Length: 316
Image 1 (cartoon, rainbow, N blue to C red):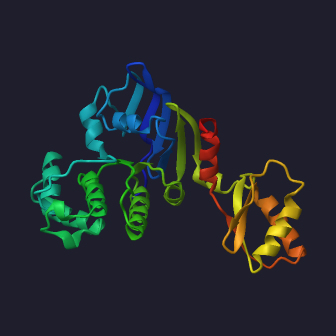
Image 2 (cartoon, helix red, strand yellow; image 1 turned 180 degrees about the vertical axis):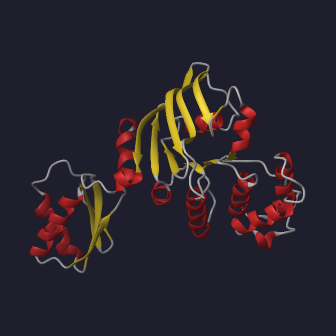
Image 3 (cartoon, rainbow, N blue to C red; image 1 turned 135 degrees about the vertical axis):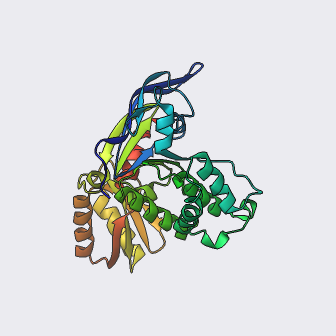
């Protein structure tokens, strides 16, 4: 199924105050159908406040918010019908079994009774909890409860999906499965918005990123543009069969460079930079010319991480 035209989420000039605290200061956000959009910002940037407003659980003081084309002020019911919401922390009914838990929300969303058993089993299979049929929710691990929360958000087949720190508590395999699930949902036309502090995973999941700070949008980028920018400066890790010779050669090669962070020794190598890809390639050639047996050269960070660090530089 292709993505529908238009935007799953459109927020313009959104402000929200809590007394004298300005949590949001005219923030703008768009989330297209058929893509995963990452929401990135430091603590206190306004991400959770924004997500609560998008989920229709908190009202904006000013600005407009549309979910699947529905104004959340004028048509909150239609907006809620179109979205699935998974908060960072959510309540579970511990004495219910996993299927009873999902059945409760299927009933709340008005799914036909004859469809519920099939839908619940499909969801449990989707989040790899099919072997927990009949188990009480309180017997699940934290990571399993997170996956149950994803299933709950999807129970009514939403066109828009909001997830706040969905990978929290997940083991490495579950994180890979979550990544594949979100990519699959986007391929089916769902507009997915994910807030997370795990930048490396967002880079693998997201098609685009929205950077927020101090309650404002400070940048929107296609992930491919960030990752493909040869001008992006990041630190690089080098490995060598002779770490001592590598350290000596780096000291000689980098002595005339300005604007570099201190070289950091690593087991079997070092970390240096920040460099562009072109500069890193030139450094590698110079080290090989000096006879250093370099066995590896790779970015220590990512373009998304670099953009985030640049955005938060003033917080140091």
